[in-house]
Amino acid sequence: MAREYLLAAVTAAVLVVLLELLALRTGLFRRRAYWITMVIVLGFQVPVDGWLTKLDAPVVLYADWAISGVRVPWDIPVEDFLYGFAMVTAVLLLWERRRNVHGAVDRG
Image (tube, rainbow, N blue to C red; front, side):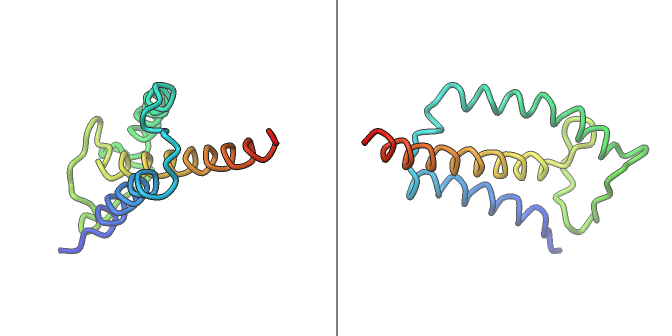
């Protein structure tokens, strides 16, 4: 069975980590502020995503063939967490990269 969303979410998460480790090297993963940011993101993601994906009255439906079927907590597909990690981390990495490049130019 194809698990497109699972495959896409895992691929996105792995690519973002590789982007940081092999290309950008911003040091983001070593920063306490990054991990605090991710906890804050999860603090909002869990209640909102939980409400959107609750199985008893879903707003968002997932095809059974597209996801792994693992849902934690409150019926949230595990793929949503991988996708969220990849999306937020990619934005922060690119922001840091731009800040580092332009900061070096601005400093002279």
